[in-house]
Length: 443
Ligand SMILES: NC(=O)c1ccc[n+]([C@@H]2O[C@H](COP(=O)([O-])OP(=O)(O)OC[C@H]3O[C@@H](n4cnc5c(N)ncnc54)[C@H](O)[C@@H]3O)[C@@H](O)[C@H]2O)c1
Picture 1 (cartoon, helix red, strand yellow):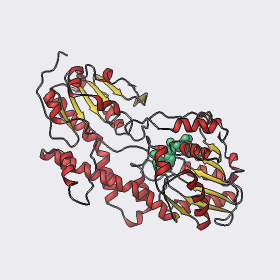
Picture 2: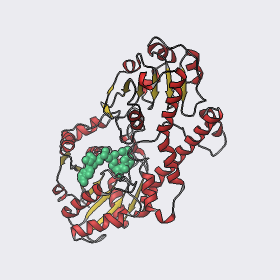
Picture 3: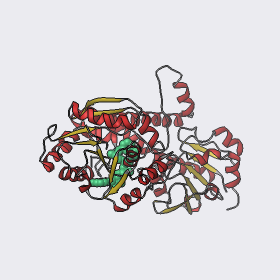
Picture 4: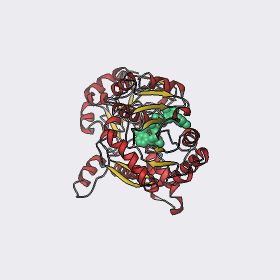
C-alpha cells in the first residue's frame, strides 16, 4: 500500500509527540484540535505546555519547518487522510463515570469526513466496551460504511507520561487491538516506523482492559504503600525503612507512599476499568482510589499537628506549599494533590506556592523562586519532588524560614538530618513529629 496520509486528532500531551514523530519519519501529517489557539500554537511549531520534555520542542519545530506537519480545527481535514489517530482527553464525569463527550464528538467528526478504506486508531484511554459499543457504532452511523469492509479500527492505547513523552513513545512496547488482522497489520506498519518497542497484537476489548488494568494496577500498588505508610506513622516506624526491608524479600516490589496521586490518567483509568467491568462488581479498585484520594487530606492533618507543635495558628502562619503540578518537573496540574491542600489553607496569614512550571493554582499566583517562597515562612509543605528541592539542605531551610517547620509529602529529606539542623519535621510515612523544640524567631 502507498504511504498512509495521517491525521492526529487532539493536540495534547499524547497527540503532539505522535504528530512530531510521524512527521519526522516522513509521514504527511495534519493535526486537528477544536481549540483554535492550541491548533495555531502547534501549527506554528511551538509547544502549548511547560515542563521538561527532552527533544520534543525541537522535533515539533523541525516537523513544521519542513512542511510535514500542519494543523486545522475542522474535521474536513480528514477527507484525504487514510489513517486517523484519536488522542482526545477522556475524563470522568462528577459520578466517576466515563465522560465520552469529547471522544464521541471527535469520532462523529471523523465519521462524517473519512473516506472508504480509512484506518481509525484510538490512542485515548477508554472504558472496556467503548470501542465496539460507541466508537465502531458511531463511525458506521456517520460514514455509512461497515466495519472491516468500509473502514478498519484499532485501539493502541498510549503509554507516555509527562516528562518522558518522546522517550516512552519511541521505546515502550505497545498493545495493538484490531477489529481484524488487516487493521492490526496496517497500524503496525505505521507504528514500527516511529518506535523501537515491540508491538503486541490483540483484539479491541483486550487492548481496552490491558490499558485500564495497567494503570489500575499501579494505583492499587501505590494505595497499598500509602496504607502501610499510615500504619507505620501510627506505630512510630518509618515507612520508607519498612519498604526497603519488605523489598529484601524476593518477588516483592512495594511502591513509594506519598502525598497523593494525580495526573490525567491514574486517578481516572481505574474508574474506567470499574465502569467497563461493573457487572463483575469490582471492590478492590474503588477502595484503592479512596485511599489515594485521602492522602492530600492526610497531609493537611500533618499540617495541623505541626502547627500545634510550633504553637502557631494557621491564621498567623506564613505557609509555603512547595510544588503545584501533579508530577515533578512538569507543568501538568490535572488532578494535582496540591489542589485540595492549597484550597484548604486559604485561611493562612500568607499562602505562598512555589512552582517553576505553573503560574497559578486555585487563584494563588505561584513563584518560581525557591528561596523567595521559603524566606520567613513558618511552615513548608513539600507536595512535589521538583528537582530544585533536591538542592535544599536542612541548614538552608533553618536559615531561610522563620519557625522553621516542614511537612514532607515526598520523602525528600532525612528526618535525622532535619531534626539535627533544628527543623520541626514530619511527613507522609515518617515517624510522628520529630521536634527540635526550636524557639520561633520573632513574629
Ligand atoms: N497525558 C498522558 O500522559 C497520557 C498517557 C497515556 C494515555 N493518555 C490518554 O490519552 C488521551 C489524551 O490525553 P492527553 O493528556 O494528551 O490530553 P490533553 O488534554 O493534553 O489533550 C487533548 C487534546 O484534545 C483536544 N480535543 C478535545 N476534544 C476534541 C475534539 N472533539 N476534537 C478535536 N480535539 C479535541 C483538546 O483540545 C486537547 O488539546 C486521554 O485518553 C488520556 O487518558 C494520556
